[in-house]
Image (cartoon, rainbow, N blue to C red; front, side, top):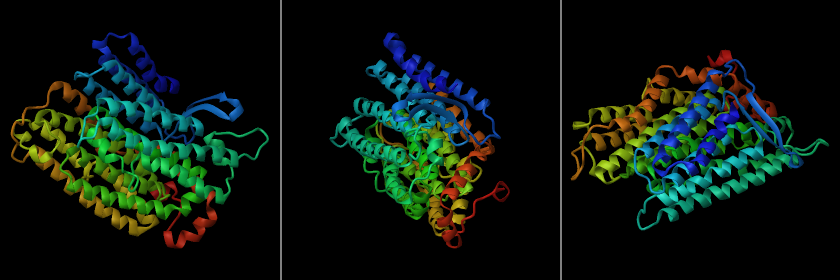
Length: 512
């Protein structure tokens, strides 16, 4: 089943070569729908009580280099796989409802990007993960460069080039780190291995972990993007085609945070503890910076972009609490943020089509003739600001609880970000829906085609708001195992810091 969910989008993308041009979009929608069906079946068969890998695939791929074609799912990645399949369908359908230049190439790239993203989440071999991580960059470079728009005199390719360079440099550093881990962890006569489970059980020297940590951190922080390495974000988010940008912001940014959980914490536990405070500083800085910048922007694309930086700051902070609550909150926040940001970008596309601008100061008054659209956008806005009774609130609550258990000062700073989120979210909603409308604004109700793309995601947001345990029950077994792996690899350091940081590996009873 893992092979099916991974390769189905690519197979449909290849078959696009023989599909008539006018049916290219609908063929791609069919491919994403089939992928979603397989992902749902995978979730339905998931064993909630198991902490190990399930539905595994393990084949010797390049034996001479110790590289395996190894796939698997557990409580950490199962919902990220489902999220990927879920949001790709409405984003692809939204594009299919509109005329695309060179549609075969466009939708083939979308399907290739879905396979690459799924591969990064499913890979259980370090080099295979690096391969899919790098492959994700290729289709989006062309999607953003060819179908993007010129902004401030910069062509789309020029804006995308900055993203490509940032991400490529990070990926190359990660490749060096992956090879270093495999070579330096090799203590057997059987040769090197890139198996994540084998590398986690290995003993990498403390000094080696220190510098390898930053090779992976550079790649993952750039991908998010995180504070100080987000220089590519502004140009890319201003020019990229919105359906492709929706999945890019909703899913690809989560691969970096997932990489920290899957690779860095269990394989580099000493360095994770040593640099915990540094990463937490970057995380809370991202929360404050992203929130303040989102509040000062008039371009609705950039409001969504900077708010994503702030939300990913929360996710990163939760990961580096090194607590069960924090990691559970991060995983929940990854899913809920993806469910929120994708319909937000699709509604931004609708607003752009009706107003001819992305400047929200020239919008407004949409709610007078489009109450359903306004209601949908209100739900999304409330989820963005983590209103109590939303799943986003539960995720942030878990993260803040983990921060209080670790270093309370960061929790207090993080709360400021929660307050600021209310300002930029409500400002965005107010100026687009209720202020006086700009000249030439077309105010009409959301169409059936667009509603088909947006409403199912909003339903998922509401459902998780009532029952976030649907996700948390399935992460409860895998997350403590990850925290225990960090603790087992860094007992001396953790014991030294326990008085100051308040560290204690949480049992299931203490978590409850």
